[in-house]
Length: 409
Ligand code: HEM
Image 1: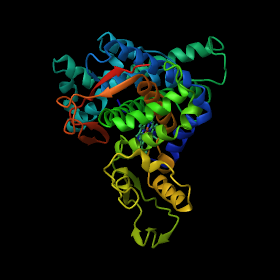
Image 2 (image 1 turned 90 degrees about the vertical axis):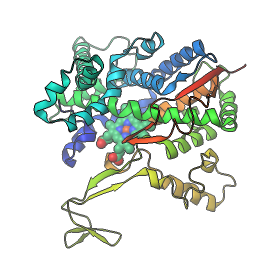
Image 3 (image 1 turned 60 degrees about the vertical axis):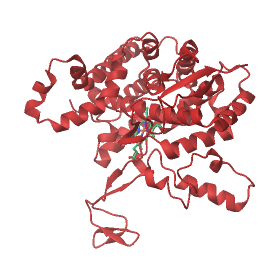
Image 4 (image 1 turned 30 degrees about the horizontal axis):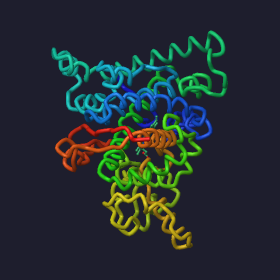
């Protein structure tokens, strides 16, 4: 089946229709209504870590994937699939597995001719069949939620919603359906968001905690800042408080600089009607680019420009902090912000970036306030965490095993 979400819709006019349908959901004021829906699964993850705390290492990449499926299920689809519960009881979660498998299926599908695809999918191996069916599994999940949601909407105001403005994305898209958007389009859009949001956020989170495991100095500074605002470590501060915490935010910015999960080429096509024409070509800083030329930006080298980010390979949250408030320093900070594009740029910039940033803040706060993080070097090290690019980054070992030890009070 073909999944066309905003990300894969190339014509600009059609993309704009898709974007208009989902964009209001991800604005900050709307997302603020969903804080508890982000904090609750994160605190459940803290409880899960409590049970293994200090005793064994945990593959937090896998754990964060389950967290993201729970967060996106409730915020985007208004449902609770209990992904973290399944993780805690060693039961495979079909949705998390399907989201993980989906890119592999894509690679496989493009390598196999159409006539052979059904034959390939019928190879009698359960894991193999699961990979082949990952698109259908996600589509059935999202489709199921759409029909459930519509049934609830038809039955009257949704029970339990005290704030009528608070609507999961699916409900918003059904209620304010953009012109020409069919049920299938809404399902595809929803699928696009779960696929775009799970691996990206869990990879970045894993690298952030990997940094904490090997940089005790940074961990202590974050914990000191968190201790100031979290007298009860089992209560996540509201997002407006988290946004004002200088070191936490510097840490996350630095994480997105070095470990933003999608640092590869983001392609755009020079349109036939251009703003600046040189014989119908687009004039880009003196270079004439004919219509149809593919141009791209990418965050990897932008974020490692030594003129903007001195010692670019060093993880240094302090670079984002003001020291003396001088004009020169304001310019330095502004230049760094202008050179940061972990979520892309322009009209196709990551639709879920506000939700992603909110999740990173909440997860780092809840976990770092409660645990000291370490790693066994035989298990997790420079080599196992070497970044591999498959459009979304992942660590070479495809896991990130860390030890979470409860902090003394
Ligand atoms: C750290 C986490 C994330 C990173 C690094 C990231 C990065 C990106 C990047 C680089 C793009 C392409 C932008 C472009 O072409 O200019 C993108 C697109 C997109 N992302 Fe994210 N993303 C993250 C999390 C999320 C989350 C949590 C969601 C939603 C639940 C999401 C939804 C989307 C959507 C819908 C698009 C397509 C935008 C469009 O074409 O209209 N992302 N993301």
